[in-house]
Length: 134
Image 1 (cartoon, one colour):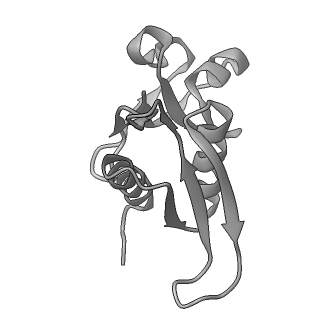
Image 2 (tube, helix red, strand yellow):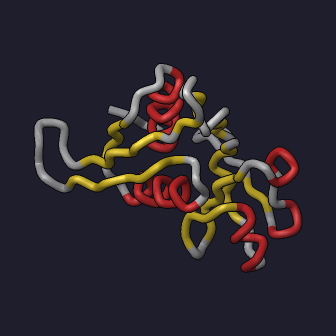
């Protein structure tokens, strides 16, 4: 049983990216759907599909990873978990992180839901900094 679902999601994506898999399967949860939606919206993945059917593995999300060029270089260079169960990291609206001077994104858990640092800044809200992606 996994105690930190966000780390599990990010590790599965990171591992599949390193060995250049086309798709990766992650367990279905509200958090995994929200993270997949943000990654698609920001152009880090091709698409994702939700399978609610009860299989041996249970309901899951299939994420189609994105690569560029003939050498199939991954679009996601790095995924870094920031807030961990042992040490939560919060940021108010004035101290929201800027990842690689705007080239990357930070995923923030706010009172209005899961969103990127740019959208949180627009709305003027802060929250828990879940991870950085670039």
